[in-house]
Image (cartoon, rainbow, N blue to C red; front, side):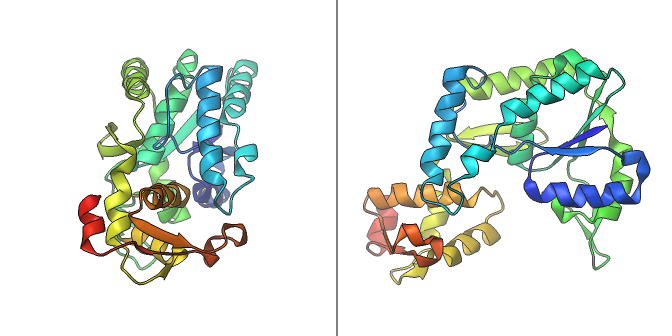
Length: 276
């Protein structure tokens, strides 16, 4: 069995669950791209794939993750997965996802390439389901790594094959999103993804700022902790730089020394917010 997850922190928690239950035994693979943001046009073609890589490279230039673009090759991961499925006809793939746009968009990207293996691709969508946290309280996780490893042993009962209808409908839904080629995609409910513009999170950025300079890391933490619909820190910093280029905010410091050296503030008072 091969388990697929879509966020780095999910790998470790699922591996711990596997250690508790040998029936889950198998490799844990991660699809690393965040398909909830960025260009999608011709995503399966060489030019579309390169356009997306170039976009990410421009974002990562001003981040602590400058080498990340060289470590992400999801196309190769899918090729290797298909090869394993061809070589071992008894192999099954379990796709794990939680109720967030990152997981769902990545699922759409992946599932559209696995239709030839219908019956061997299973899904575990932990959508709006209650779990027990470390304090013994019930909660509804939005990401897999919020779930205790032992709780995955209950969740495994949710595994079911992706149906022929889902392969068709989900592929069509993903094709629609790729054709829309919006900058941001959010989860409205179930597996329904809605396209938004690149400036979708700009209001959250401006609401987190004042006329007084704040450390960039502090601003990021405030936005990510308060925002129900989350995105990655690299995308938020890129949006801050775009807003800065529009003269609405100011960012100061040496980018070569990392985010900890950067401060950010509103360029003016309420006029800047109104302009946005």
